Amino acid sequence: MHPIPTWLWGVFWAAVLTLLVVDLLGHRGHHGESRRAAWMWTGVWVAAGLAFGGLVWAVLGADAGQEYLAAWLIEKSLSLDNAFVFLVIFQSLSVPVRAQHQVLFLGIFGALVFRALFIFVGAAALERWSWVSYVFGAILLVTAWRVLREDPAKQQGNRAVSWLSRHLPVTQHLHDKKFIVRREDGHRVATPLLLALLGLELTDILFAVDSVPAAFSVTKDTFILYSSNAFAILGLRALYLVLAGTLGTLRYLHYGLAGVLAFAGLKMVVTPWFHVPPLPSVLIIVALVGTAVVASLIARRREAPAASREEGPGPDATVRR
Image (cartoon, rainbow, N blue to C red; front, top):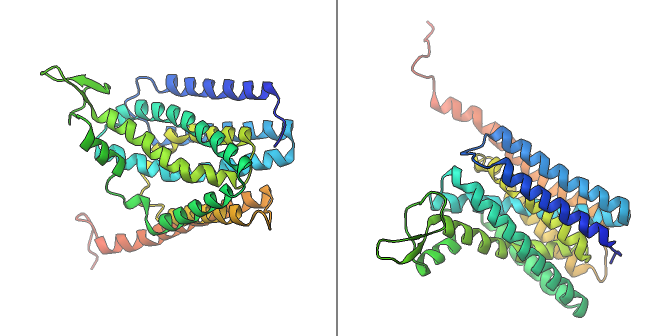
């Protein structure tokens, strides 16, 4: 554990709250957002996360900085899975783009609260019972096998949303950006926006069961864990918009994510006998996700000419004699 100056916590919370306000005000009244703008905002969130990591490095030392970077990369990688699920939820509930930012903003705010609970409870459990690390390792390995077998880009529905739809009084129609409306008989019912928000929160809690133990594989410091998680989560909205149009492009991404989870699980299990330093962990994570992304893009590029040939010449094509 690294001794954390009180002022560093203050800088962290000031940065997080400022970024949340910027995100809220910067997208007020927008009915949509271009892919170019989404890429720009993704760059802003990545830069903010890395900049805070640089501050951690400067204040707490190189080891702490490397631990932050590794934990941030793990959460950022696994948040790709979250983004795919968010898309499935919005599509299944027919939530228009103009209302998605409000749901995502509140969902991210809730995720910050739940991640704090998971991290501080998990840290206390690990400090009191050493065998908890083996439980976390087993959870990560099981999840890695599940992610390896199930491509999130091919999901057709969300179980959390289906369960909520069966147990809550719900209207099938959107009412502007309201979460609850009153029917003609006077009863209050949930709108698809509330279902989407609750679905996002429940899904994030389930993902936290995977991602938080994965972050524990590189550090046990609660400040580094929570700050890295927070800065990775803050960029989820922009990341979702970037990935929304590329579901079929990153076909091998889930293999890379499964590799990250398996690596974190094995690291938790073998730590008493073999320690992997933070910097090699960073390189392994980058290699796993980077290889999956590059392989996906290569496969996509190879299929493009074949698809063009199968379509044949268009109606305006000129036949040469």
